[in-house]
Length: 366
Image (cartoon, rainbow, N blue to C red; front, side, top):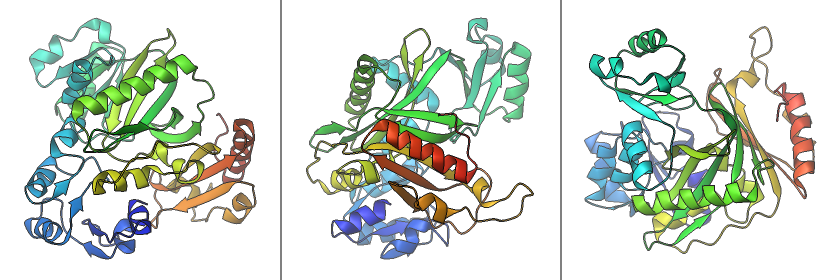
């Protein structure tokens, strides 16, 4: 999707991806099939590209740092490194004056034994490499915490206090190297099994004052990181009215896919513009939007046999926009695409989204 946005603006793209059937590599002008730290592959990028970005937060910061010695790289390795370590990320939130959940870092038995009981029940998360619910375990007691840490191979973790959640939301911001900063409207998100399932914009249940706080906090996080590119900051709005930051992603984000059809500039175009040093227009939402995430589970029937979804019935609904990613194999829990629904009013978009969910066999709890 980033490659398509870059090509629409007249740029040629080279993708470095170790996957031989990389979806981005298949539509780019050139695909370098190499590991993210492969010296030959990085040398090819540095030789052939004017500017380089990442679409995956787990690309080693060292690779970006190496490339930055030769070419424009955005976001910077330092920014990505913050997002790759939950402890460093939370420290940055606190330094930026943005509240996050009470937490404690666990790297050894002494820190495990010293955990404040007030943090339980909580969620134990690996400091690195966790996303879409991976590397996370809910725990209620000290014994469960010890077992969970053992189950996670005793890697460095953070224990976050489990907070009474009312709504999950996110804010997408884009910042240029010149400091220009713009944002999209607040996005209301529903997760199932730790994976984003539904995004609605405008956020139907988020009051204006909460949205204003979230936007201000997201912009503050980007400013204090000296960030360049598109950044997604995710928040929890709690039952007691507090707004706390959950995490951030240094890239265009799943919750921003609605911008491809519901706004006059997509998150991917803003990423291209930031990378190329072009002006960043203030995004304008022109249609109420709902995004449904499409996981590989949809490609299997109740008996586990392969069955393609009924796209013809879905696309017969008004305002539906199907985006499939070109992944070669459908697997349970794997993101295969998304469906955007646009309409004149939020109620109309929601109604069509529910109809699409029924056709696809998805829950309608949104």
